[in-house]
Length: 258
Picture (cartoon, rainbow, N blue to C red):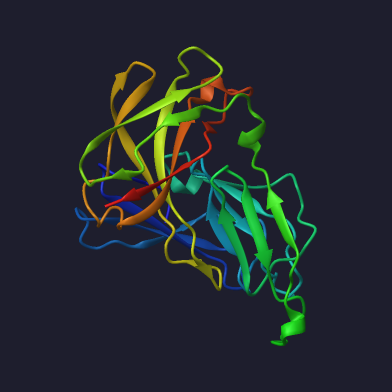
């Protein structure tokens, strides 16, 4: 599920892989009584046997691992640019760093609170299910936003937030008043067999500014964001990155939504 806005209750869900490189999307909107799956541009690689799709701290979608149609390991991860309003114009690009360890069935990918990606596990051989077939090496991927300049820092934020309430986040950064473009709640990962049933990225509304911080509106209800623990990220505006094209996330605070 792509990032959702807490005040605009529309969800977009992507289905991909399964032995080829095709991808489809469905938009779930209460105003549409007959949603349909539509094709979106295909990935650069065919993938099956448990690739992991993961949302990064800036909302980017990356796909990691799997096998191609010849059952060879796919070592190159790729990223979907879905910024265009027209899904037919979306594009996939290969990540510049190639994995050194294959990741397939029984692999796991998790977003860490510092914005890095933790990747582990996999079955090393073709169809074996023995304990000695399990991959024990771990890799960590550092997304490009970690190299785009000074990161904003959350100085204070509540450890617990309630549905529908306005709460305050105090922050600091390289500039005297770094502009925060967005605030996100990202649920803690819970991955098995390439599926994260707990994955959810929620953009929160910034409703006001205070000295050294912002006022943020929590999700209205548990349909938008189930109760539990989330990573709270603040992100600097793209104009404050070195390239001028990348939102820069803070290190997350763990908060409880209730």
